Length: 257
Image (cartoon, rainbow, N blue to C red; front, side, top):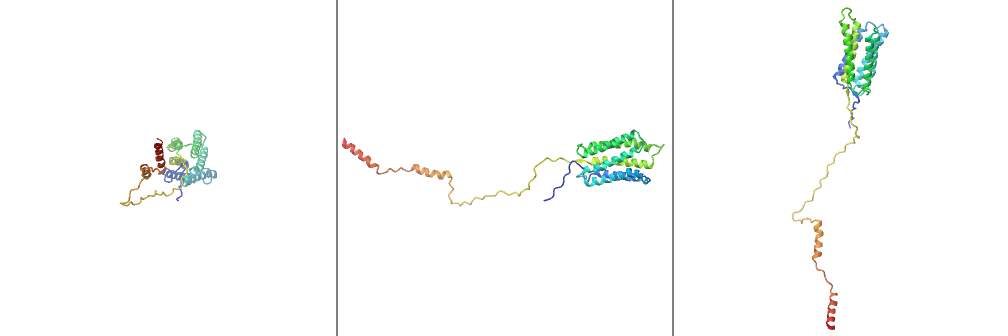
């Protein structure tokens, strides 16, 4: 007997999903931009740990888990997502305090919570993830990328530009991964199937061949009716001894007269 294939439960990602592969490509772009932006800061150990080792390690782990366990255990990708959110918060807190920093921290916490709640089963739809990550990308492009790259008076530095592109690529990869998520259909509970036995055809009973001159078979009613008819039609014999006394009585009656 062939082994039954394991069916996905909860949320999963197909191996040949276009959005999953697109998410992997965007993570590769994010890693490359992050390495290019920090290649002149290898002497700063805290920066390397928080802005290079942590996000790059989380991205590589996410790619590995998505491609290997995306169909049967997609919930394992929660860990690298939480690590990426922590890296994003650390990068924002290094900037000057302001409204944008507070908004970015709140969005990072909210995105990590929604992703974790979805894959753990608390949220039964993937579309909240799509909306959250799409909102974060829109915020980064409108309020961070466009003002930074369009400012001709104070052009953005190469390092800051690469870090911003890396951050946007990370979030875009999460948006694509959320689009790749599918929900497994819950199968109705059924009794365990027993092994199918081979079907046996009903036996065919062949009637014995009948000879041409052979008498037709009599039914039970006809056989039982013949002795009854002979019995009714037969004469009931009268015993001879009983007749003699009758004659004597008649002679005695004449003598008496």
